[in-house]
Image (cartoon, rainbow over all chains, first blue to last red; front, side):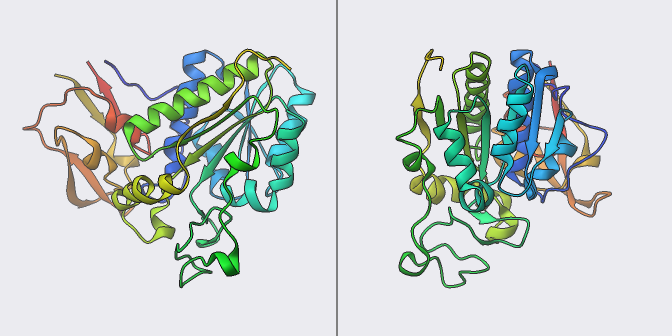
Length: 247
Length: 67
C-alpha cells in the first residue's frame, strides 16, 4: 500500500511545534479525512490562539484566527455566513474548557452545525505548561508543582459528562499516541464531517495529545503516559452518535 | 518490499517512527540536522513491510511509503 502526504498539507513551510507534539499528527488526520471525503476545497478552519495556531502553517485551508477561547463561537458565525463551507474549529483544552467553556457549551446547546476538534494535552502548552481544566489529579504542572489537588483546584473537566445532556450530533474522544488510535481519530473526523454535510448538528471530537515538552518527558514516554494515565482518566470512545437525525 | 522516502530536512528528532516501526527500519542517526535536532536515519539491512505506522505517527510529515 502507498502512503502519500495529503495535498492539503503545506510542505512549503513547517509549523514550529516541539518534537513529538500531537498537533502535527492531528493536522495530518484532518487532511487525510478531508482528502478521502473529497471536500478539501470546502473546508474553512478557525484556529485558536495557542499552539493550535500553527495549524495554519501545516494546512493549506482557508483559516481564521479567533480570539482565545472564542473559536467555537467564531466558527458558528462562519458557518451561518457561509453555509456551504465545512467549518472546523480547532481549540486546545485550555481554550475550549476554561475561558471558552461558554462558547463550547452554548454551541452544543444551539446544536450549531460545525465540527470542533479539541486538542487535549492536559496543560496550557504555549504559555509554559500551566495547569489547565483537564490536568489530571496529582499531575505536576508549572502552577501545581506538588500535583493537582482536587480540594484546592477542583476536579478535571470531563467534556463527555458536561455535554451528555445536550442534543448535539456527535461526541467522541480519540488519541494520537499509537498508529491505531491515529486511524480511529481520522475516522472520527471523517464521520463528523459527513454529519456536518448532512446538517445533523454540533460535532465535537476531543483528541488526547502528547505534550512532551511541558510534561517533561521524551516523546515516547509521553505517548506511554497518554495510554497508561490520560486515557484512563478520560476513556476513549464515541459518547453521542445521533445517526441520521437531521435537525 | 516497500520503499520508504525519508525527508530528513523536516525531521525534529522525536523518534516516534523508531518507536512504532515493527521492523526496526528507523534508527537515530547521532547526527544533527539543519534545525539542530538529532535526525533519524534508515537501517538499510532491515526490510520495510509498508504498514504505514511511521507515516501516520510522524508529526512533521517526513515519511512517505511507495510500493
